[in-house]
Image 1 (tube, one colour):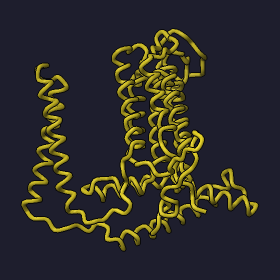
Image 2 (cartoon, helix red, strand yellow):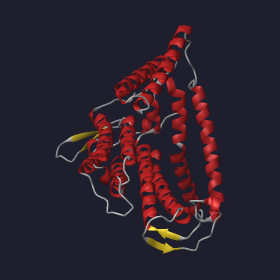
Image 3 (cartoon, one colour):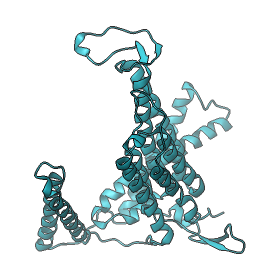
Image 4 (cartoon, one colour):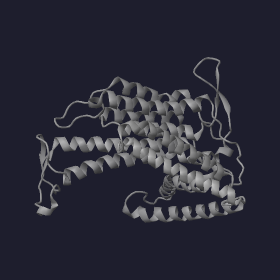
Length: 381
């Protein structure tokens, strides 16, 4: 069953910004996009500064706009943006309706209902204060930035190419995750297609009456796609594994168990439960545990019998994209340690958010993949 990458030319040359220069069109390594997106999500989780969070959302949207391919999965970014807006709105509404009226600046007085004493800390309506509303807004923006970062990776990285990059030991799990991740883009595409068909037939495509006529064809298409996918996986020998000796199985299980034990011990030491001087031993234990886990994955991967068609390759743009995500996360974490007041905007009393210079450098680096990476291949006519 051919994928969209097989129908799109692998590489074509197009003129770049420099006169006479040629730049190759190709697919970027999917893990590079996911590494960049994870870096943005880590950066967003380290701050509640609304200006920085909006900057991260804008950076992800700009990179998606410049490097989004002409493929079905690339159309899901708008859906993730809507989810992010919905999360912010729900967070604000929950604070307005149920949050405790702390702070000293009143915004508006709503009708309230007195609740029993055992509902301490919870209310229904009443006076709305500015300080808790700002805190709810900042928390909602932080979650929205993480959602947008995940949506950006999902719209830039092909799920089929992501599947090629997972270790052989977790190939079956990777297939399940990829199939699940493609559900949302395909659902969005099917809904748009059905609504267009209804509009062409003169039927309503919005409102309550159109929901039933839209959902039934979408569910029917999802069932057909699942049956086709199951037949394709069965014809390709999905789930086939090679025979392994008892010694090989014992080594694999022992390496995995040893790695888990060492990671648990290392985290216990790093959290400072033991003596503070044992922190170095905690780092060593975590590193050794991760090494044993990598050995276990390598040994377990030998049971998977499969071939790779057009394997993903790492080139300079791919490495630079992954490094941009890591640098953004590192700069935001460093800024949180150097200037915690700038990265965590105070709400009691409310203050105007500042912009630490390290975080501004991180935002500039987060934008770099929009210009450092090649354009994706164009769709074949």
